[in-house]
Every structure is written in structure tokens, then in C-alpha cells.
Length: 56
Image (tube, rainbow, N blue to C red; front, side):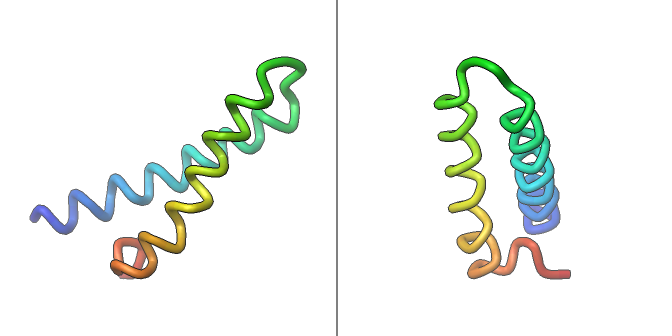
């Protein structure tokens, strides 16, 4: 059950990163903060794949 919860949180993180990337493209100000959030999400992706969080 705990592993499933971690997988759901990982999926939500990837979706939130994609949504942040969309907002970053249309934002006029504060792009640095959004860029740092996107960088964290992109770095999270290979880490979560390594641990098998995004695998079925």
C-alpha cells in the first residue's frame, strides 16, 4: 500500500512539472522561480525511474 502511495505522488509530481512548464512558457515575470521548479521536476524523473516509482 505504501509503495502505491509513493507511485501516485511521483505521478502527481510529473504532472505538476508539466503544468509548471506550460505556465513558464506563458509567464511574463518570475520565470527564474518557475525554472527552478521545472529543473527539480526534471531531475526527479530519472531518480523516480531508477527506483521504479513510475513503472507499472
